[in-house]
Amino acid sequence: MAARRPYVRPMAGWWRRNPFYIFYMLRESTAVFVALYALQLLYGLYMLSIGEAAFDTWLASLQHPLYLVFHTVALAAALLHAFTWFNVAPKAMPVLYLGTRRVADRTIVWVQFLFFFVISAAMIGLALGG
Amino acid sequence: MSKQMPKRSNEPVFWALFGAGGVLAAFVLPALILITGLAGPMGVPSADVLSYQRVSAFAASWPGAFFLFLVISLSLWHAFHRIYHALHELGVHRGLPVVRVLCYGVALAGTLLTAFLLAAG
View 1: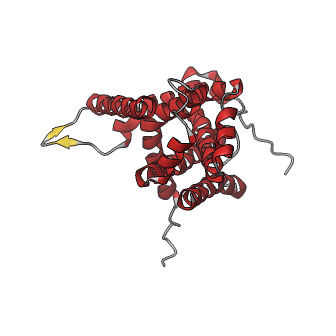
View 2 (view 1 turned 120 degrees about the horizontal axis):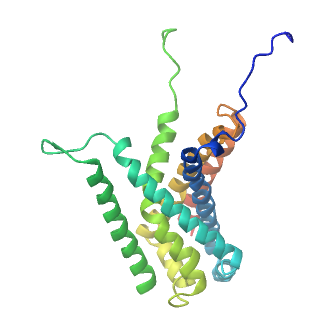
View 3 (view 1 turned 180 degrees about the horizontal axis):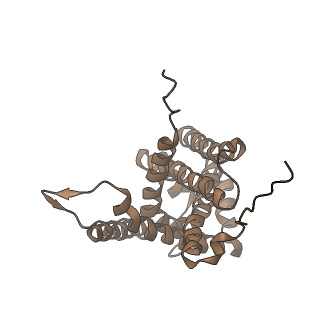
């Protein structure tokens, strides 16, 4: 068994050798921040369920600079996720027809961006304005 | 069942959750992170943005609870499905039961805990 040692190309760090794959890994890594943010929100919901004092402790802890840095990076990751997600949607979904005409890929992309801006503006308006 | 029938994959179920979570995260997470992670804690424009009264009233309302449940659970399913497959690129190969159980286990536990907290609170 030991006599046959076929060459296996080393794969470690393969994605760092090509900008396309670096961007691919950057895109996939947005999931880490989506997961951490969802868990952080779940923890806030847990503190909310305990009562007002616990909730205020949680809210005050979010003022820590490390948390503000985390949420800034998470915001950037969420924006990158949204941008890349809207752009691949026409490739991932079934072909869309309006009457007999096929809806162009770029139309699907910009309609999503339009909805994104309307939803974001509504959420921010309701939360910060009301 | 015939011997030729390949074993059916459960991947479509996880892919559907990944897709649904991806859509929801793309549309609402940037604004939500801005509200709960930056504006709320910093008290911009006022200290009431995330006041206990406001947040508990939101979580107690049906639309608010439904929104929070979907955002937290689907974000977790989306993210852990993506992490599970991306780990393969880093040499942690899929098919390892421990990786699968850890990834989807956290998503499932988070979903159940969110439902419990919203139903109990």
